[in-house]
Image 1 (cartoon, rainbow, N blue to C red):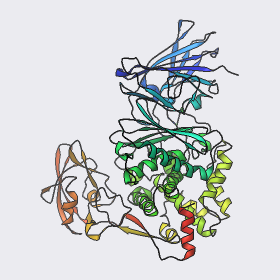
Image 2 (image 1 turned 90 degrees about the vertical axis):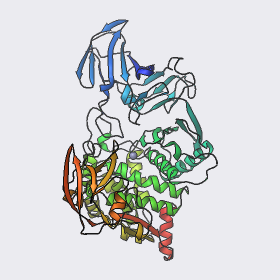
Image 3 (image 1 turned 120 degrees about the vertical axis):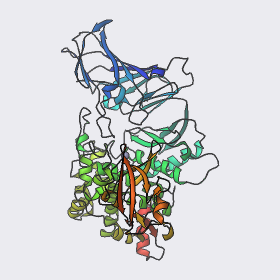
Image 4 (image 1 turned 135 degrees about the horizontal axis):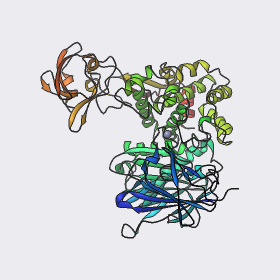
Length: 602
Ligand SMILES: [Zn+2]
């Protein structure tokens, strides 16, 4: 048995954004201990090379300096010593995302992969972490929020924490600062939320709603055996959105104004977005944090890990995040159908769905989905959005074809029993095999077309079997995300096949659709829009300009490409019906209504 690894982190220079991290290895390798830093963080599939933020690093033993050689971009080897070895690193932390580490004079936040090196060969050793406060001149009211188990530290206090191994150590993000804290229970398990930012929030209502939501998820798969606590860490700035899942916690970013203020009692669109985010990350407690692809079992954080299954872990999670809102009664059916209509719209508007399957999108996440460029909408399909729609289609298909005997819920329960409760990784064909096994339906053609192919999803017909009409219309323009009915007079008649957005105060063409009028006219991403049909065109007025145009019109378009003025002619085309909304039918027969109730109110 190896001895415990002792880590210590101190916000040593908040103004310079520097943490100092020390770790002591009681029994370093006699050949010279190797240390390494992760290249990526689980849940965010991109090589980030966290070692690049190490600004200084040295080793010592018995008070004497020990030689430290850099082996590659992320690893170091210390000289051989026979006594305990201490590594001391200064790490620059100025990435405010949920994947990063950030330190300034107002707070400290870190993810383990950004600040803690691993001790090669002793990754299974228990870890202890001492979290030190900043200098008193910086702050005296800071508290510590993390799901890491306390080992002497008081609740929300500085002091000592512990983790069973390195993988667990880096799975507990830590927020330190001026915090608003709420607590609640789910099935007797303590849950909490710690919010950073200047918020005025109805904490009682927030906790009540989160409890309702978490209980809904627990009712599907049950509390995991090792989930004895859970904490939502929330940063609520003026604007922003994002989240990252962990086993006992999640880091969320959402706009301050999306949280409920005292006196609010409705779930408006902004609060619905926040609840959807919390729902998504909480569902990951099962789906991807405990039940994982075999490719992530265990994680190799030194290099890319390839799997075609991200659509299962992100797409199915994206399906259940909103579904849990309606099943728990936090939103009504109409509100849920609006969200579904928006997801369908997002997928329909991306030409990339015709070129890339979700299996390919999963596999290539590292270099495509996470590195989107100007051609992304033409080349990439989101394994989140299309994955969620495949989950929807599969759920409805199973319900209809098994006469309500089996649903996606049953497939997920069986997957959870097989690979979640056991911790064995899900093989690449595992999800499909289980879906076919529990339903006793041959789903080979379905998965070939939907997952490995680029076939259109049979949603219109499947939603029909649940008493829901699938409708398409033209977009009303920028800002129309779909999901709702519209009046024809407000919809576009024609389009340019490109979006004009403001960039550094200038109107710039982005997202140019393959085969659309803008591309046919030779417009390129990044071109600055100057004039259309002799008049100045901006992101704010382009939709109005187009309202007076008709299909077939030929308009002179002037753009700057770099500093050169170009003139071209755009052949205006009819706007596509790329916007979906769903309508609940109330004239359906009882069998259909019962099926719909079983789906939305499980
Ligand atoms: Zn996710």
